[in-house]
Each structure stands twice: as C-alpha cells, then as structure tokens.
Image 1: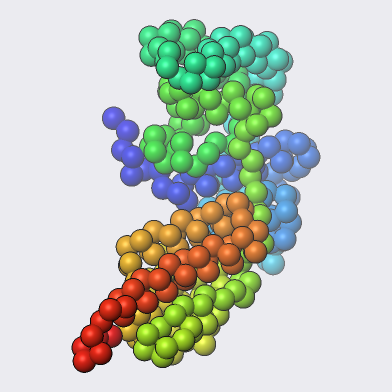
Image 2: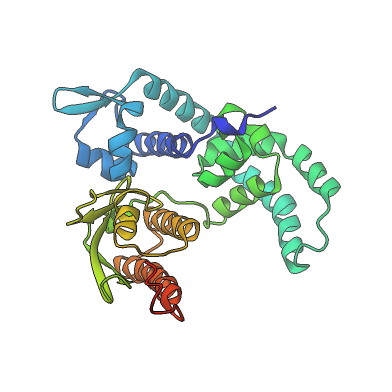
Length: 305
C-alpha cells in the first residue's frame, strides 16, 4: 500500500529537477564532473530561487566557489541516460501504438464528455501497454505534474509501469507525446521581492491603511510593520498581526486559503506581477467589505471594535 505522506511537494519538485538535470546533461553531452556556478545551475537545470535555497544540496556538493553533481545524482543520471538510450530506437513505434490505443480511447471519451468511461476497457488497454509505457517513459523522460505524484503517493522512477496505472497518468503521457505536456519553468521568480500594496479599510481609523507587501520564497513580507515583517504563505504572521492590531475584522480561514492559493499560483508562474497585485488587492477589498459590514447598523453607544 502506498503511503501518501511519502511524496511531499519538495519531493515531487526534486523528481522533476532530477529529470531536468539528466535531460540537459544528455542533450549537451556534458561530463558528470563538470562544475557550475549558481546562475548556470538556474539557467541550465530550471532551478528557481526556492530550489537554490532548499534543494541545491540534494543534487550538488560545493567545490570551492562552484558546484558539482553529488554521487547520488550522478548515479541517477547515468542510469536514466542509459535507459533513455536503450528506449530511443523503439520510441517512435511505441508512440504510434500508444496513440492508436489510449489516445483513441481518450479522444472518444472527450467526445462523449466522459459519459462512456469504461474501467474494464481502460484496464485492458493499460495491460496491453506495459512494455510500451516503459519505453515511452524512459524515451521521453517527461516532466510530471507535481500533484499527480503528491496525490498518488508515487514517484514514477520507483516503479514505472505501476505509476501509469491510472487514467490521469496515462493522460499526462498522452499530453507529453502531443507536445502539450508539463514544462519546467522559473517564471515564478518574476514576481519575487517586488513591492506591491495591500490597501485595507479600518473602522478604527476611518480610512484605508496601505501596507507595502512582497512575495518571498517562503511566503510574504510586510514592510514597515511594527508587528514584524515575515508572513507565511497564508498570511499568518505579520499581516494578520497587523490587521488584529488595528482591530480589523476579516474572514480568517477564507483569507488564509486565498493568500496561500495566490502564492501558489504566482510561484507556478501563472501570474504576471500586475495580476498578482490585482488579486492581492481583491483579497484586501474582501477584508474591507467585512470590516465595514461589522460597523454598519451598530448603535453609537456600543462602539465595538
């Protein structure tokens, strides 16, 4: 039985970085003993700022002021590229078989809006594709959506055939073959450490307070706050402390969810800086609506803050 706790977000991200390293070294024909500086690692292997901070030592060891692949990573790259070279001569035919079987099945399902999903038919297709799946995986070395690994509790290289024993995993392979698969990106770094504003109405002062805020690799940073500056991804810390210091009423659980979701979208490179600012202000506006509503209709003699 799979323990779903075994695949964390960092574990899933590490898997994709490991594949990126193997593919890039294979593409360049680089030596496993080549050394790199941090900018080279970020550019060649799609490491973002958070990867450098938390995952660099998973793959590299320092050698003076530069870095070299550690023994564990070198061994993985050797095995991955060996399997890759063995699969390449068979890859074209394997892709044709996969497209004619699962690809056709998937297209038919979409045409019927999944009303005719047949588990038995899917299971039969999957069993017939065991050898093909192995060739496709090592031949293509696909990037896998992290949530497929987190939710399944599986890393594909631990057991390739078993990993693809699910419609969504097969669909991910189909997307990769069709050129629509997951891509590694560092676009999330474009919204890091950029100053934005968070304007919230407070009944205590009778006007909007404007907080200066930045997204960091770990969460948010609230500048010029007397209640600290560090916030977690969900706003816990300086932001909530400041709101509570100003007696602001807000839907805490909802705002926590919204801020964390927003941070994740930005981290995945799905938002421009302007989009991030706009959505951040939408959360602030939501807080302002709740804050105003608490005071509306309140008797003057109550003065409840």
